Image 1 (spheres, helix red, strand yellow):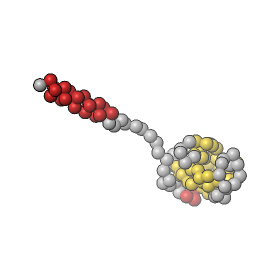
Image 2: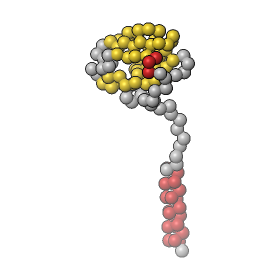
Image 3: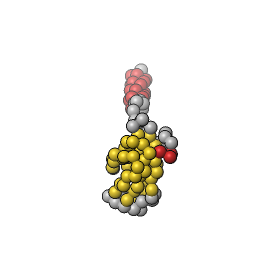
Image 4: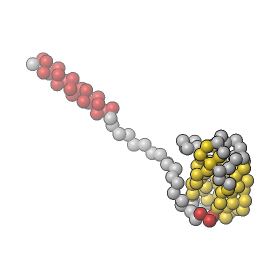
Length: 116
């Protein structure tokens, strides 16, 4: 009888530990997507791929441009004005980045940016 009780205890104990180790935890995360949420004629970004200078033309009075690495790390943030803006991207290593544009009316658009 002791063997059965001990075996039953071990099965219940191990099952409980396994169940606790596999519990799902709620995680809140804001993911960046490549879905346009604003009119594409509100801005233009060129040249793409860029080497040292990126030109961004905005048809909005105020906007913000953020450049993220593929892993989601914020590398650069610039305030944009109406018209043409010049951005020095020579500090970025060659690679693929995400350029996120946010406007005063909460509209956003994210585009791929390539640096040679």
